[in-house]
Length: 230
Image 1 (cartoon, rainbow, N blue to C red):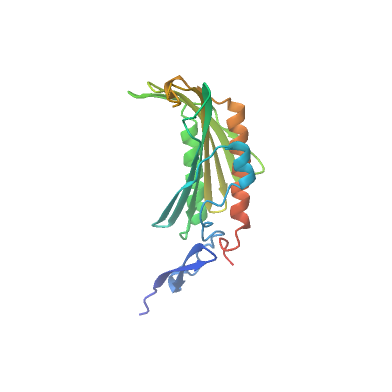
Image 2 (tube, rainbow, N blue to C red; image 1 turned 135 degrees about the horizontal axis):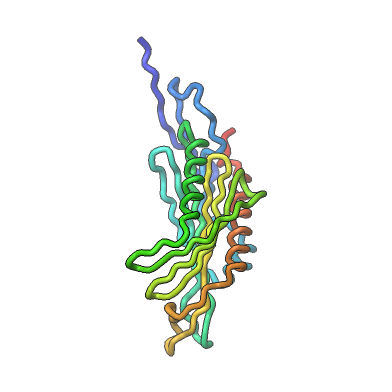
């Protein structure tokens, strides 16, 4: 009696970590298009960051690593909440997260993850002891990835109001999530933003930024030669 087996292996190619299996156990399994994520916080492009995050500080990466049949990585960019002069400032925050499903059912898992995000975005207004989150109706977006949607939410707490636009894109067996938010805040006598008195950025601004960044990040993933199965 023969016993089928598989061996997992990790190979670093051009800065990207590629995971794969070998052995007779993977015969007939569907082939995932993406097998690795781009290294570092290389997307969005410097030009887009300059356009939408002109005062951004150095990116904060979270490589996440591997968990079961998933690979995860994210990057955060923030603008300062203090200024040496002036009466107010505008500060923005951008988060780019990519989840890669690399198991035998990677494509189906990515589709399920995308649908879960879609359902969550349709919850309307949710209130708890901390405050409330109002989710506006999500909007399907064509021309980015295999399927994508955009939605805006407004959070209200004792610390103030904030508005966030989220763009979720599925491309093959990867799901990319973009969160873009920000506001204009008065400064106290020390030049520190008074966040509870902030006014969220106009929704048209955050929607435009999230969509442009999602298009750029998704394009960079598709163009990553070491990320695609050969």
